[in-house]
Image 1 (cartoon, rainbow, N blue to C red):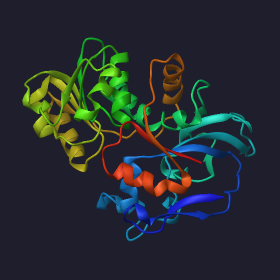
Image 2: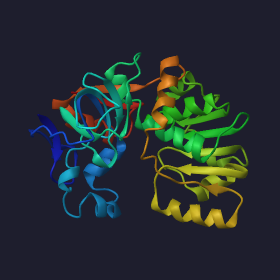
Image 3: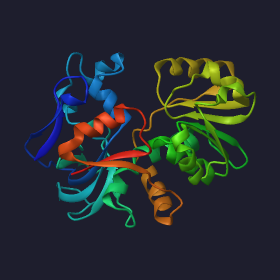
Image 4: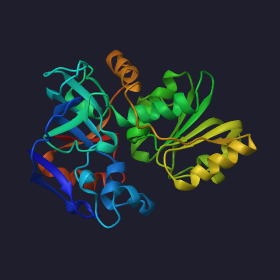
Length: 319
């Protein structure tokens, strides 16, 4: 089978499409024939070996063997199931998240049947389904599970035109919030079409300049800081960054001190969230935004586009 691998950390050109054996199916496993996957900002950081402290997991000087084929989101068809697997059958159309197993940038990926995997929404194409996993479930995790957004609250989404951000705008509206979206000038119409009540063009305004406006600030791209954003929070407001080691320290400090809070976490196990997201997708309450698609043979170009930092929604790789 074909697989996109990187044996060194570095720019997009370190990724090469090579031939590898199809992974053997073990008891409890599902072998998926990949139809579509994505290239995300998280995977580009992994390819670069960033942040440096992350190399404890990724590999100190070069990627660990099991992490050389990236790919976190997947949609495809179940090709084979191992012994004792009852949840899925060959021919099932599925979508899901590979997590620490990665490996979806290939013709086939093997996952445990207990992984973050679900039947694909029937109304979605494979391209749309691949782009409807990580961003949507991450936004759900932070807004519903961490911040517990409820009707009447004012929520600001920083990075509203990205993969997480486009879903965050829609989910915050679904939960009854008034939504302010922060994005670049070329994406103002997009985030408005997703339901944003107010839009801040970051080239013209700074959301941190306001005082006491928001119950929740969700920074999907971690381009702000709690130190800067806290003045824009109402009393008891919550600041949600998706990454950043220093934010873990802020989270502990604000937990002990009380008042305005920094809430951190990692949405790794997405199995329980996928049916919720699937229902919203099927009903049309949640839209999938696909910026560009690339064939697997052109995955380096996909990495370059994501590295440029201006993608709208999701970048999909068809396999």
